[in-house]
Length: 332
Image (cartoon, rainbow, N blue to C red):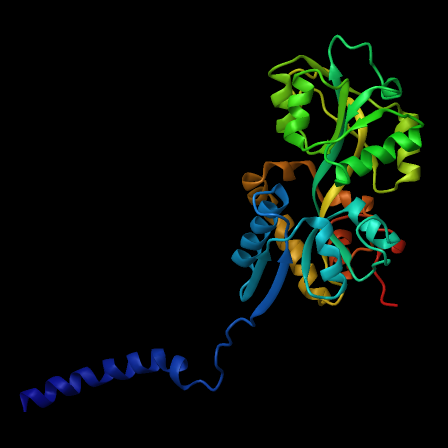
């Protein structure tokens, strides 16, 4: 009898416990798992800045978007990403405003004009940096006329861009080509008169040179900046602030092109909106891993040359960026 009473007293407690957990077992509504989203992201060669940037974006997106899975692919470089994206084989890809322009006009790496890609966000700035020796009589870009000027590897994106600059400015230097590392040694050994290189700032190569020989940066005039931009819209007037390099005491006026991330037009607007919103809301985390990303912000979107995905446009307009209608991608 005593055992019965003990069990009887526990019965109400068991009922209460069962009632508390019953929604987990008896409700007709199951809690749905996040829908899995798989995306491919073409980077560049492993070890490059843009590949690291793409990997950082991937990890940030996966951290804050449930169900998202992104595969980052090593490629031959950002220019190698355009043809696969045009065939819808990549969802996202490292790119550049110069690459966008060339792809859209069927230049250099493609014979056909490519249009099946959209701008989504900037990654960093590539400043066109012209420098020579402190004691050199060369003080302006114009005075590079007839001089031995190193511009990087032949047919590389930066050498093509420097050739374009000199062409539109009416300057005819004696171009020298080699790998960037060999170029640095040539400057140190004074085998060239100057060098122009399109890259982020501060560039490690220039800091290496400055540790051996005293150098100075050359500025473009406002008229020259405008002339370059008018001829090549993907090159935008900009400034390398004083003290970006230890030897640099004044602002240097030049042009810059953007490294970017492109997106396939067929991705849903709401997904692209979410990707853009999440990454800008956690941009400080990206910059901690890849400091070169500090040079850009959403306002750079007005300097894109390829149409911007409508999902991205929605976000940028929400934060006050005036995206002109002609820059919004529209289905043909």
